Image 1 (cartoon, rainbow over the protein chains, first blue to last red):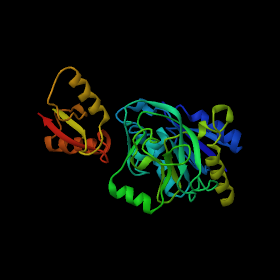
Image 2: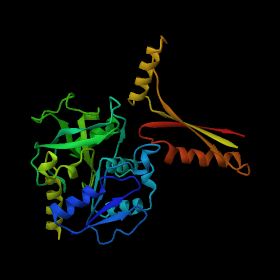
Image 3: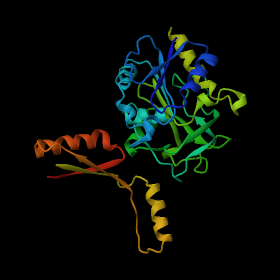
Length: 232
Length: 81
């Protein structure tokens, strides 16, 4: 199995993602510059966190027009796996690969802290090694992480079991107090209808080593690796 | 020719920046402010050889596909000849 990490001008978690794939998943991984358009041979691509194009206009808005994004759309349409983390989630929403949008945090601050999320479904290629209801401690670092969508989209996400992570407290209770940014329905991550595209605001790639405060993020990458191994 | 594009948040979409601005303006002593909403404004200079209707159409497309995110924002285009 082979992984790609897409690099935009302004990406800054690309090396973290690369490190996790090579060290913890133990699989080949390449950086893919945003002007490249050839994704042949890759099984999964990661759109990493950062500030692509300096967050000009809207977070993720300009990255959508990078040449690689047409290839990412075709890659996702073919059923292969796309993981968008933080700015990557924002880019996937702007590109229309995931519904909804991420706007300014409720309290305006850039928030950089460890939070808890509850796994709402294990029926995704990214969470199949996790139990539904299990609580992960992951860091967030964003100013625009406030997930919004219309009523119809929210109903669809619920019915189709596409809400993958929700902000919660340490015990797994989903409360307003545990919602760091004002996201609708405490949504921290959602998947596509085909379930092969996941976007989330927390950073699992920054939580793969105890030294960094949590290694809960490894479960996502273990799940994806298990999915790919089973498909091989 | 100049195109002006106004982008604003749709009604109902939370605008924490607008709220913070309202609070600051009230601290300055202004009363009777019911609401402040922050938007974006773009000026696009166009070649004068472009036909006005064609300019309106292409700027509307720019506004729809780039300058605004239709999930959260509305836009308005004005053309100044």
